Length: 398
Image (cartoon, rainbow, N blue to C red; front, side, top):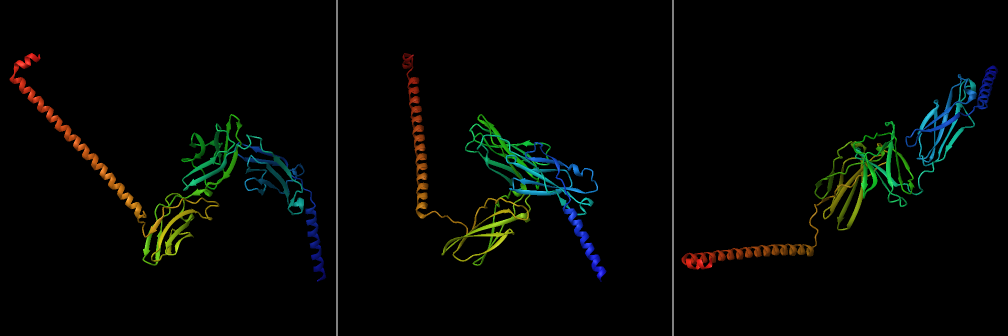
């Protein structure tokens, strides 16, 4: 028993010794950290070299821990890799911060994973490009029913009236940056871009840049990266079908809009407005199914409309569709007040009277004109007869 305890203590001491050796093994950080801009609107390539002290230690596995400040999420992002390069997206109008550690394991560290105490870091300041305050505002892209994309923006109040704006975009499926295929123009000013007919990929980062120039100088550019499946706006439901069980229930059904949006990705909101003896109230209801049953009561009028959005299982963000036209039960009747109805009748009668009077005047005028024409013809006939009977009169006239 004593021998067993002694062996256990020796093994424990050996493990502690190995761990202590691993913890106190000095590991240098990587070298030659370089950030390269390939002209892909902020998709930067990061490269580094292993520390010189580890170049000949091929028996010891080396990894690297890369950390960079994600300017879109406003936090540090870290990855571990055995490669010596990595690509990441940055907002070029903000500081680019990157640092890399060395991770060492194997016989050099007695089997422990040791991270270098120090790191190699590069910080790049944003370029001083563009007149301050001239960047566009409220850049929004919408994936309409998953069929085509439009992006819109608003001009800055400090942007010169003669400024010319341009949009460029890039994703990993493109070899180089492309310009907007079709600008949306209002009052001779570019306010957006229409990507109809352009295949933008789902579940892939797409980077947009809007910049420009003016006689006063270059405009301040903006950079935005997004995935279009998170910006879907479903099509509007065109028609709601109502079935009633008199005095008890109102059964509401509708069809998912045609298009590429999967039906199981849609979540629905129903707005039901009720008006009865106790006044008017409105109710909002969320459902995953394109149908709903509502209670109804006598002497109560119900109007419903519906809209949809992508649910959380298919997209991280969403746009609500437009509301469908309202459908009411009982059906809408004329709501014009009696006084207005009387005025409508008066206007109708006046219009008929005026038209009748005009028609009568035309008829009288036409009759008088025809009568006068007959009288003129009769006088001519009499005059001709007199001439025929008295040739001498005719001769004197010549």
